[in-house]
Length: 361
Image (cartoon, rainbow, N blue to C red; front, top):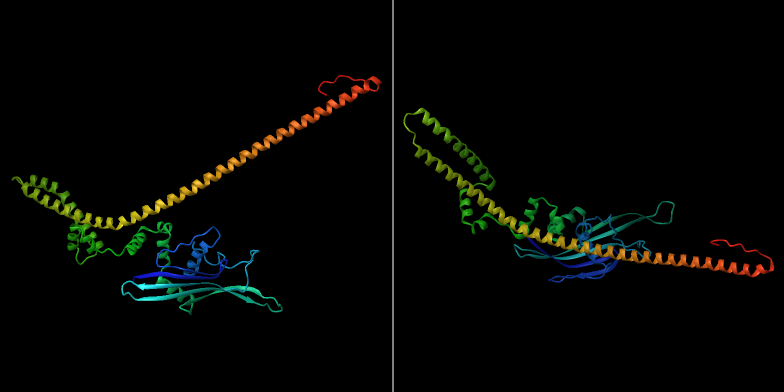
């Protein structure tokens, strides 16, 4: 069954600091923008937590804080933390449409120990609701999986997750998103593939491939024996062998081998059509990744240059200050020395002191 799922509204209550926020999503693209720390990532986290109990990076609610804190960074007690999502779900095969409301609530559990009057937080539990009906976790997860499986959601929203998958899984997801491509679709545009399909009627392509491999081995073995058979015919009969017949047989065998190679090439072409779209998507993913890496590198280079310039100016100022201090200290020493000499010179005529020249006083 194929479904089209549209998110209509997200309501956050006491979720990661957002006390009561409702985000309406229109039919087109809804842009959520703002400065750092204003809650953009919180909106993405709330959506992932509502569906799978994780934040947008895949961390469980025990590893990321969903509680609302006060101004001092302490969580506010006695609050229920919840996210509600309203979705329109349309069965693209039958056209049947329905509205689905999902709600996940994180609840504190408090108890008063025996002999004490103060309550203590003993733990938490999570409540789950589907269209207002309470469900167990397994039931809730099953409902969510019918709407949007977690792995498929990661594939269509996170280009890096796609690269971690095995190539067969990548192919399956691409075919799922692009629509199933059956053998008849390929045959409609390639006559050689249509001819191949006529030969494999009643078999799977894998079975036919194995059959071709066996036939090819048998034919190649026959080709290897033909020169030996010629030699045996020459030795064992006085009459010249019918080389024309042998060459005709060889030509027929080679023609059969060429037909088998053509059939195998048609199968390879069918695979190429399927992988062409995967290569295109891979190229787009690589371009985005390179752009992000360059932006990060440029930012790091700019930060390093700014830090270097700041350190250079600080070092230069420190050197200038040290030089001024040395000059000031030298001037003070010189002034003190000159003043002492002057005083002694004035007292010498009275016979109080006798000056003796001292170098480098």
